[in-house]
Length: 499
Image 1 (cartoon, rainbow, N blue to C red):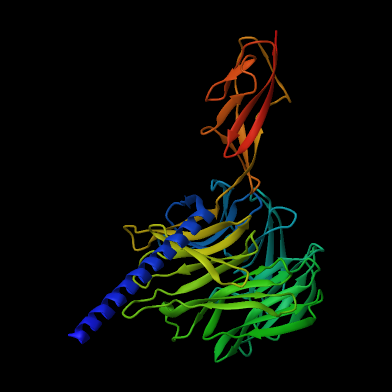
Image 2: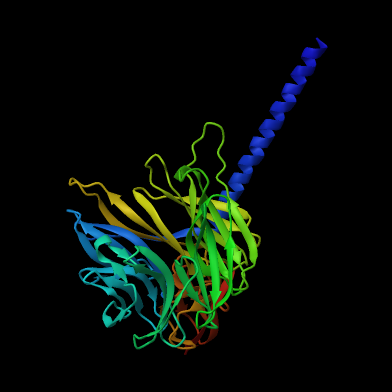
């Protein structure tokens, strides 16, 4: 009897602990969701539809106006390859312009030019020995094209294979590009970096000891090159080069499994922020896990993380891959990943807010019906552009796919209110009325006219009164201040009533 009572008591205590643990876990999840909702919100989403095409999105370049330039490769309903498409969206998501590149032109990379407009690097299938650089204006008009003959060619036309993958502008108006030379006799490749002057001439062409996928030029003119080192598995490789491409240092960064890098961005300390994913189980995407590094300017690891997708007994993991890692205004980081479904469901974006050591503070997962995740990039001021494809099943054998662009960002905070006045003082005659308007100024430097929720008061109602909608009525000669208050901020309208 005593044993049964003891067992009964132990069972009750166990159940109480389990309920308490479950409640605490639920409250933790609710707290994380609340923190995420307070930190980041949907700004806008936009679908860009082109007739009878399948747009296979490749990249979105954040632009200075708060919008983005999207690059997509495409085919028609008969699967005929179309020239690449560029679509420019403004800061509200509205399409400003779109442009198909020339026939047989293939894009390797697109960047916003330092002096305005855009630079496009690629190759013509009809001229595979030449690397093409095209400058577009802010409105998408072609300003110039430079065709640079490069040793080993810029493209293998019968394979539709581009040999250069990335480029960056230099301070003297030229560019550096990384890629590989094709040795037709042996069928092998040699990795290289080439400097092209502002006039379109090759200044130098130098070999690289490892594969090169991305290049970034620092303010001082030095260069980071990111590639891969293979020793059974693929590992992250980073080298720092001088302005003349002499090697300053190189490092290999290992992690469990075979690593694929999706994003390399500059850090404020002069180093790099790198993310991608690793796979430890025979390339099964269900076991992809995010990897991320903050590397300083000397190649030392500030922090390195593997964000393991934990799976309980009997559960199925969809896997997760890092798309971008960037710094936030509070000295932390934002890591955006993609969670792909192995069941054919739409993929999801996952935001991870990290502390200064790269440890997660909260997460927010978002998805949109019929949207397949492609990319994510920071816009600046804790704003982010998410790029995807809208899949629409058609009656033909081809699926209709459209560009889909989404903007998420930090919840804006009002820093001040501005009175909308043409003069520094409003002058009215007795009996006149005037409707006052207020503009809110936010911490991301944007402005917005306020229409509701404003509290209006008059400093002297004998001179002028104001109603709840901001309409002021002049009563007697004198001076008065009409005050608009919203979320603790005030805007003052000086008013003079004439006799």
